[in-house]
Amino acid sequence: MASFHHSYVFCISLIVVLFGSVSVQAAYSVPRAPIVYRPSPWTLAHATFYGDESASSTMGGACGYGNLVTNGYGTNTAALSSTIFRDGYACGQCYQIRCVQSPWCSRGIATVTATNLCPPNWSQDSNNGGWCNPPRTHFDMAKPAFMQIAQWKAGIVPVMYRRVPCVRKGGVRFSFQGNGYWLLVYVMNVGGAGDIRSMWVKGTKTAWISMSHNWGASYQAFATLRGQALSFRLTSYTTKQTITAYNVAPANWNLGLTYQANVNFH
Ligand SMILES: *[C@@H]1O[C@H](CO)[C@@H](O)[C@H](O)[C@H]1NC(C)=O
Image (tube, rainbow, N blue to C red; front, top):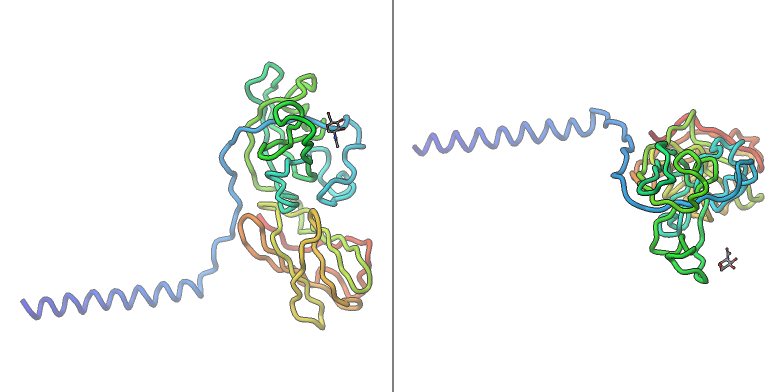
């Protein structure tokens, strides 16, 4: 009985040792499956629209994307109430929105990118015009996007919405502003969850420099980086995944220009 017990214990510990080494090896040798952002559940909110059908509503916005058409976002965009805008960390996120519970609803689903803030207006009641006042979740959609889900006559409609992966062509784009001592980078065309939590820059002669969030989708480094090829490291706000884009900008990079990486989130 005693020897059976001993070999039993021996077997167990052998299994533990084998399993232990297998799982350690696996952690180092098997590449992890790529992180893919999955849609969130559908949730109730409301939507209105702003602007007209022209391109005038596609300029600017609190994310700093500038001209939304030339920068690839088009008119399928929305301003988010501050509850979901999260001080700009929601910039670039993608949402599907469909109209519910209104005679003005059509059957379409609009897929929009968050490109702007819908600010609160405390001189209006939250249930009568102050649609973007916290804690309301609200989408103020560009008019062409709104017209995909409802008739504009509705003014405001209840909607169901969910986060979806952003499908982008090519790599992340970095648009440079600032001056010789200050690099301000607008991050655009972000795939997957679409959002950025933190960012680093590295010149060929520097270590990785942490960039701080400025506003919207822009990040800054106070550093002299002229004449150096620049690499960027990005961490997703939602998935926490980090990707590195090496040598995105050549040594003769310039302010006012946009550089595209060959990597992206999915
Ligand atoms: C806020 O609401 C008031 C009252 O309706 C309106 O007069 C004002 O223009 C609004 N402010 C903004 C910034 O939209």
